Image (cartoon, rainbow, N blue to C red; front, top):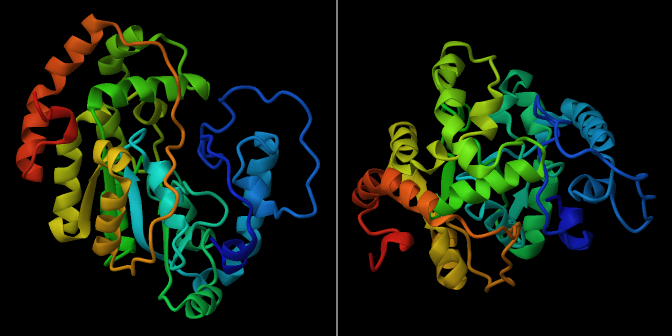
Length: 338
């Protein structure tokens, strides 16, 4: 968030939205109704971050125009000191919005989820840097608040994408990573509801689970073999695979080591947000200026999961969760008391 936005931006909405820069942008739910008139008291950046404010195609065009206009000053912009890399549907938006309220923290200006290191890497670092505030402006705002500024973005596909970790480690040396995890059974169900809501999935949950192995077969390998290849199913139909957290954490560890990774258990975050928030600030080396108002964002109501499906998913995840507990050194919240 820019210094001006820190001081004057209105509260942002809680709803989720797809990343308009992705190759599949436009496949979501059709836009209905005219775009609202811009209010004079609200910045264009505010509208671009509001999922209900503008026609998605118009927002995409506006973002690309603004990024292009900012590229000549890209080298003068602050690069992220930390990233929220996943997992999807585990509270990344809630944590992102909470951290963005800290006076030292500046998020990507045009969109929280830049999706550079996964699906937009071909655009280059100048394009990426253009999403962040000017370093001089961030420093000036930081001095006024008595803090050292740090920037970040949150793209939850980074954790799952097979090339993102390597790219991040190469282009952002020293960056720290935040990872959020929740019950993988619930994550899979929530992920499916999310993809359906955005028009990326038409199959019911059980059918989508049955189709997943065929949909993902060979896709990760093809991405690695051809870095320019975009896999629609790998990004949008990976309900079970994304919950196999330990495999992804081991990959992150190979590139970053354990000291630059901080895992947040979403169950703990939503039951005891103050302690979790304090732990995140300590990991990031940020001063604790008190606790913001904690809000759970992007929660999506849905019908109960059939018991037979839940039982099958629990069986599937059991060996992964056992390895995860060993990796973490403690039991994740969804296994405590089991």
